[in-house]
Image (cartoon, rainbow, N blue to C red; front, side):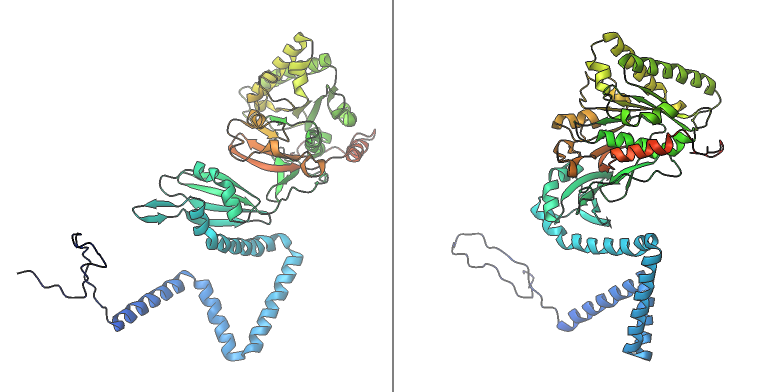
Length: 484
């Protein structure tokens, strides 16, 4: 005999077809209300206990406030709030850096995290980044949110089978969905990525020339500002730098910003600057600095001779260092040599004398392949980044792309795939007030380009530098033992 099934059972629902297969449903059992209430109460108690165990600091604060209210009432709480406000105000006034680090930044990050959690499911689903698997909607996991005054960095754990390219293809959707100006996708680790959402443009206004630093770090020379509002520092020691940009993009300000950042070490004799200026325009304005502390050349023949002389000096230094040193440390005897080449394309491609072209190109190739370990750095600027114009562009580990004329030129300067990663150098504004000095940087150890803006070193700033540091009366020298 068939077993009797208890509970409410409905065999078929509103099916007008008498020949249709019956749609069987499982029996329905009514759970008593006291059991439901007991289970929910147990869940509430368990969650409360877990919260208390995981947040001891919050528990202590809440207990203290409760005890204060019990013993003093509202006057005690009001006095406590006023005291805390005064302490925070004094902290912010007296120590703004530590206040921003320990108070402002965590509070802003928590507030922005709540903003993203509230919109996360809708943006992921509408932007087609949510995945349906076995009838379930799977969302990428929202991780830690780190926020500055300009940029939010959102950590995301991917759903199995997704890739950062899926998010890169939906970058515009994410930017509009979260109310940001721009969204870039950064690779973090396998199965994870970081979304950079720009809320405010820290590079919209012209940045005045930065003060000349008293102490020079050749691995972090301040020259401008990053997109997140942090200082932008360039490394010269141990690398070579290629700067690409159209006319009026701000290459001259970047070159003079590097000279300005190293000026203290130049005066101390720890850095020796060389200038190759075939246009006789940009570097010639501050020629007094090069004539006093280094070398200046403008004629193509003089430039080729200067570069060949430095190749010989570099090889002589390498012979002295062989078997003794593996890394170069700037000293008066062996200073760090920086060779600034403005419009290198003319020297390697456009000048009519083929022999001079070959000599210049051979010298630059030797300096860029052998000079890093012994304290030589080449900083080259050009407008046309094509391979036939500068065949040795791959010998520059670090690269900067300022405003360019064509989208293809972005990858020529920064490397393949740079524009797909967010380096939109061809879209930088031609207006000098908003676009001059804006650039994208791609370093050898970081494939993701970063948006920056160089400080504007004006003609009066250059004249002031020459008048102060290249005057007949030299400043007091820095001792040999003082490091740069």
